[in-house]
Amino acid sequence: MAKRTGVDELKLIGLLWRGSPTSPRSRISTRSITTLAVELADREGLDAVTIRRLAEEAGVTAMALYPHIGGRAELVELMLDHVAGATYEAASIPESTDWRSRITAIAEANWASCRAHPWITDLATGRPVPGPGASTKYETELRALDGIGLSDIDMEHTLTALLSLVQGTARATLATQGARQPGEDQDVDWWANIEPALTTAIGDRTRFPTASRVSRTLGEETGKANDPEGAYRRGVGLLIDGIAQRIDQSGV
Amino acid sequence: MAKRTGVDELKLIGLLWRGSPTSPRSRISTRSITTLAVELADREGLDAVTIRRLAEEAGVTAMALYPHIGGRAELVELMLDHVAGATYEAASIPESTDWRSRITAIAEANWASCRAHPWITDLATGRPVPGPGASTKYETELRALDGIGLSDIDMEHTLTALLSLVQGTARATLATQGARQPGEDQDVDWWANIEPALTTAIGDRTRFPTASRVSRTLGEETGKANDPEGAYRRGVGLLIDGIAQRIDQSGV
DNA sequence: ACAGCGTATTATACGTCGTAGAGTACGAGG
DNA sequence: CCTCGTACTCTACGACGTATAATACGCTGT
Image 1 (cartoon, protein in one colour):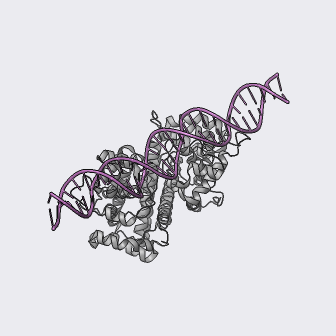
Image 2 (cartoon, rainbow over the protein chains, first blue to last red):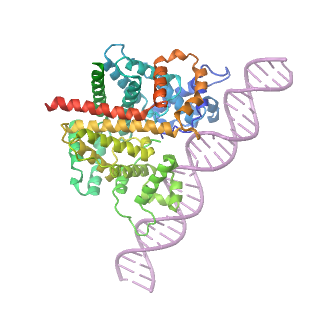
Image 3 (cartoon, chains in turn cyan, red, yellow, orange):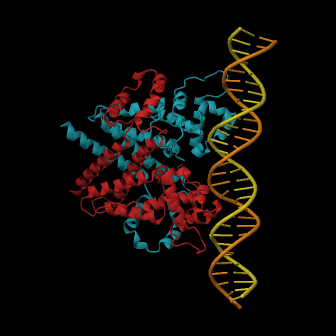
């Protein structure tokens, strides 16, 4: 459910930048609930994060959460900002003068974040989350791209393109894994399951010659029905090469 | 939503490749319901596509749909396959020997499809939809990449990366537009709305110097808070340049 | 022409969701 | 000690997907 509609932006900003609990009487806080929600989503997926379930884990009733989270739409934004703020905690971007490794570090950090919090790939990154975590992340990433010969606009475009690529391929990877039936450990099993039905349905096997050839090659070399992780690595490589070309052109 | 879980793959394949209605008694068919659902989603978003609503528009009760659509999860796959099959109806890929324009055509067709059916960007493209529309699209796209000097695996990776980039930036574009409050026609309005609250919340304005500078430049030159469409164009350009470099290297 | 069967369709109901609205209990200021 | 604001609880509503059982229609074999 990729809904990010119905967010009350002003209420959200108040919650996002809230420092300490509003009252000492509170058993819960915006931060504690957000942390709990993120952990729950990491464990059982975003659909498991229902107001009632969250309240149960927090030891309060469902309605007690609302003063701290606004509503479900706002809670999701709080969760996004929370993980955005943690993106570069584990692996920060090197200060080296090699801009290629800095871009790779951005890609890897976001990739790792998607692996750690698969549910974020289900959420659209349209309008930026106006919170401290997302702002810090944005600042960090722009700083890594600053001074390598790109204009401000080019920096922004390049970063957005890079992050779209990473999130898109990550989403494909996770969707592939998440759709597995119990007992299916490999894509091969899934393929073996549906192949007979598919063959009878299609009838004519020569209808998709190129697709058949590529699928066969892919299956033989990687053992997968599709390979978004490989696409991620190739895509980032291609992007970096493209950037290098632009810099060289304008730089000299 | 971006749920694509809980799909009964075998049932789905049967529905996807179903030719004519199973019985002349049927007032409705898999195809008619799918078409209706796509139109409804185009008009009012994926959340408006509920079983009851769809049934109402079709003139039957909710439960009458189930023999034709399987369940909601399967219906979404049917919808995806439907629009995938129509991707190259309006603008087919030129047969020219210029592979750059063929790749651009792939990107543009997918971009246009996302504009026409914004809800598809909410759905993960993990495991491929095993239907005629998606298969035809895949075949068409691979054929456009065939014979330009890439290995089968590279073709697959490149295509996946390209489509991830297009879908990701399209999603960002549409999320920005879709999140608008009634009466907000420009990003500028949204920004003007939240800016005071944000400034008081952050307090220190120098906390995000690079982000502030880039945002200001972007706002001045494009009038937008972010510019995923520009990122799309730049990203595709960078990818193509990267591909050219690889081809030149290995080709000679 | 007619009986019987399979299936398209309906009616009803269950458990879940987000959350509105009214009521309750507890710490702080007079 | 009393009152007041507010953190929290209780109850309830409408919408969701869909299980289940009942109904009505058209095709097939005689």
